[in-house]
Amino acid sequence: MKNLISMRDLSKEEILYFMEIAEKIEKGDLNPNMDKKLAALLFFEPSTRTHFSFATAMKKIGGQTITMRGTSSSSVKKGETFADTLQTIAQYAEIIIMRSPTEGAARYASEVVDVPVVNAGDGANQHPTQALLDLYSIIKTQGTLENLTIGVAGDLKFGRTVHSLVQAMSDFNPKFKFISPSFLKMPAYIKDDLNEKNIEFEELSEIDEKINELDILYVTRIQKERFADPEDYEKVKGSYILEKSMLKDVKKNFKVMHPLPRVGEISTDVDNTEFAYYFPQAKNGVYMRQAIIAILLGGVK
Amino acid sequence: MKQLKVDAINNGTVIDHIPSGKALAVADILNLSGSNEVMIGINLNSKKVGKKDLIKIENRELSQEEVNSIALIAPSVTLTIIKDFEVIRKAKAEIPESIEGLILCPNPKCITNSEKIKTKFKVTDEKPLQVRCHYCEKKYKIDEVKIRI
Ligand SMILES: [Zn+2]
Image (cartoon, rainbow over all chains, first blue to last red; front, side, top):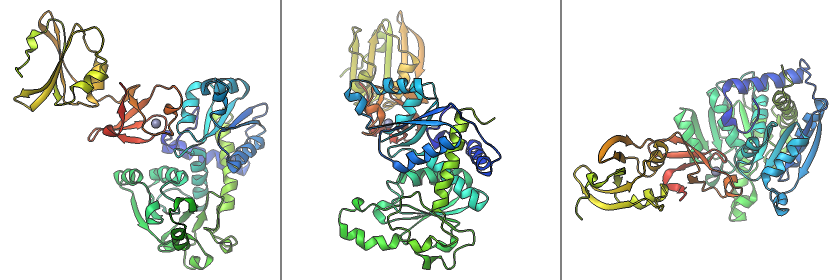
């Protein structure tokens, strides 16, 4: 595998291979050495957390990083094409990790340069490293990715992370519960895909409605700006806040995940229960990104 | 209008059974504004399909790839290639697996709309015809996209 651009490109076997390598790195059974390797982090849109996670991952496997920030048009202003910018950076770095608001930017980059490209998020399209770290968190807590019941709550219409997660889990015979306000429901094209694959799902409007059936509850942020009327936001937001009192009869293996940052959709009293898993999830992101970079740089034999 | 006769052509291609009203769009896709003689028949009577359009191009033999690009808007067309008044080949348009440079991506955030990149689409479903952008991965029905002219 040369690049990581989209979950659509990955077979089930390849997904499981990423899981296996991340686990070996976490356990210390595998210590890739990326000494003298340089990762160029191109962030054409701010994302402090994702940047921090990649930089940490590269450093933990002995590599170095350089960062270029700005908008994708900043080099265009100087008259340089995007392709030229990429080709120049590819002369310095062994791997390019790229975040862009432009959809398809990472795919295009991978066709322009010879070094491996990792998509660190391209607009509303893909964020495959997030999807893989989510899957790694699920397999770590559940022991398997197969036959799980997964609740996904929040903004399901615009949430790239939940789209990738649903897509990535689809190979593993899941059941989904989609929990959102009516105007932020899962888009039709995703539901069509699920129907085609005969994957069971149900749409709910209260976060605790079927919580006792879930193995995983994946909570995401609902942005106030999505609501035309701020009063509507105040009215519905309570239905999507997870509280400790809702967790009385959940399954033993139940875990709450969140891509972070949260803004109140998980009450802080959940944090010190055995079900909270969002901070370890962030840590898993570093192991997974170590695995991704090492695999693409040929450092895993 | 009187029936145009296929045998009136000497060398070239006859594109028949174009859905009525689509002939000009087909002509655009094939870029027929060059120097070849072109005859376009619109709303001709057809025993099989009622009304149809038809295009005759003198001295140009269409490649299968060009034929296939027509399939995007007119899957029912039939092609007859003629040399010295004789039919040398008949062809049907086949919907290609991937389509390059022909479709404009309707997604304003797609990189193909901000960089000079040849678009690439994969056919995902045939009925109704749907395509997915190779770059932004959005899926569209064929009547939601613009065919580049
Ligand atoms: Zn596109």
